Image 1 (cartoon, one colour):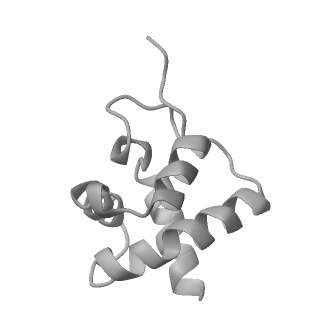
Image 2 (cartoon, rainbow, N blue to C red):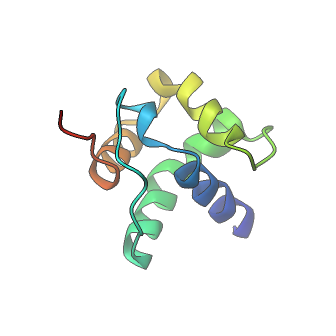
Length: 88
């Protein structure tokens, strides 16, 4: 469970928003509730699609970007909500 949380946080710190948008704001500080929502909605995809990736240096985020079309709808929606794209 802790490993999943660390992977999720690594995903956020590794610029998760580009998984859904070309240009994104820096990751905001997340509340505990938001972190739990991210874990609940994206944790299964992280384990399924990127479980063999060692966390750190943006590797999990890169893996998620590679698999962005395979992310479940709830994960995509959560990432979009928590990391909205920057308006031009």
